[in-house]
Each structure stands twice: as C-alpha cells, then as structure tokens.
Image (cartoon, rainbow, N blue to C red):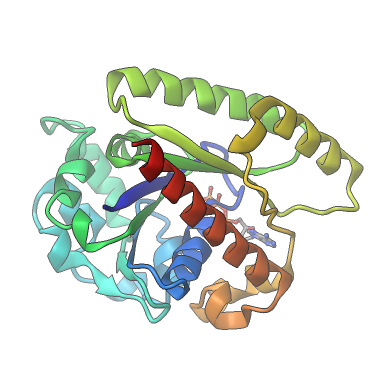
Length: 259
Ligand code: ATP
Ligand code: MG
C-alpha cells in the first residue's frame, strides 16, 4: 500500500520544498520506494533533485492536462527516488485546467495507475491554495505542514487547518493531517521556543518530534542539485531529516494498524 503525502502551507518560504526533497531522499535511503512530485511551477524541487528544469520533456504540466501518462513523464533522481518534474509551463497548465472537467481530481486520476509502485508519494505544493494545491490535497492521504515558529505562524496554521477540514468534506473525506513540522528552528530564539510550546499544546502529537534546525548545509545542498542526504547526511539538518523520515514511517505503521 502506498501513502500519498502533500507538503503544503499557503505561506511562502517556510521550508516546503526543503522538506519535500530531503524527506524523499531520507525515505529513499531507508530504503523505501519514493516518488516526489513537483507541483510548484517554480520547479525548485526539480532542480534540488538534480534534474534541470530547462531540459525536461514531459512534466507534471502534460500529466495534469492528460497529454502524457505519469509513467512517461517520471524521471530518476540521482538522489535515489523517482521524480515527476515541473517547470514554469505548469503556470499555463493551471489556467487551462480551470476549464477541464473534474479539474480538482486530475492528479489523483493520473496517479491511480502507478501509485502501487511506490511506498511513498510526496507532493511539493506551491505557496497558495490554488488549483494545483487542491489537486495535491484531493490526491493525498495525508498532509505535512512545515512551519516556522514565528509570531503570526499559529494564525496562518489555524487558517490552513480550517481549509483542510472544509476540503475534507467537499473533496477528500479520508484526508488527514499527517503532522506539523517545525522548520528553520533556532533554539536560542525565545519567541521560536514560545511559539513551539503553543504549537504542541494546541496540536499535541500532530507535531512531529523531529525539529529541523536552521542549518546552512540545508540551504547549500540545492545549489549542488543534491539533497542533504547526498550532500552532508551527518550535518544537523541531515540528521533531523533522517529522524523525520523515521517518524513518518512509524506513523504509517500506526495508520495501517488502525485501518
Ligand atoms: P516557496 O513557498 O517559495 O515554495 P518553500 O516553503 O518551499 O518556499 P524552501 O524553498 O524550502 O521554502 O525554503 C526557503 C529558503 O529557506 C530556501 O532558500 C531554503 O534553502 C532555505 N531553508 C529552508 N529550510 C532551511 C533550514 N532548515 N535551514 C536553513 N535554510 C533553510
Ligand atoms: Mg517551495
């Protein structure tokens, strides 16, 4: 059985792509069969996976429009997982998508023939609640929400949780919040510690115990087209993402037991 997990937060720059890429690589190292889907026209997850977005053939764009099979567009990342790449064409695809039937369920349908080939399918979402993100949330079993422990973060998080609950009723009744992951964390920052405390008191064990530190190695890795696992797995960031992958695997076992 495969588990499809969207990495989403409508707020920009909170570590969605960093989490998607490094979690994919850490799960692949576990070893698990992983597909990473880049659903952000910025193509950051594609580049960070060591695939040049300027040189790809079919991409998530053609797949969503029904012009290519997912199988044909998927490439192998040197980081040990499969990748459905993306580039800026996805922006145009999103506009075309508006007029297509079942426009929120295109990704779900495209993944149906291949989902059982993978243990984990991760989807890197753009920083908005756009039609692309809706496609990710309609296809997903769970959502991982990366967040920075900043002043307005909890407010944004409540808005996201409400949106997910609303979507659940309309689009995808089985959608769960897989977990919230604290990113770019600085233990010396009092505000971050206070927000983190509030987060755990509100959301309890929905908050992953692995905390991703602010770590320069994590910021450097994408410029080498590498995940932290390939670039420096013993860095603090590398250890944190390996820990997160372990938690995701343990949660998956729990989901299976309760299913
Ligand atoms: P967007 O909303 O634009 O898609 P995002 O939520 O995907 O952004 P990232 O691209 O993952 O966020 O991260 C934003 C920036 O912060 C990037 O330059 C990334 O390298 C850096 N960054 C992310 N996580 C960390 C970390 N733990 N330590 C240091 N730098 C980080
Ligand atoms: Mg991103």
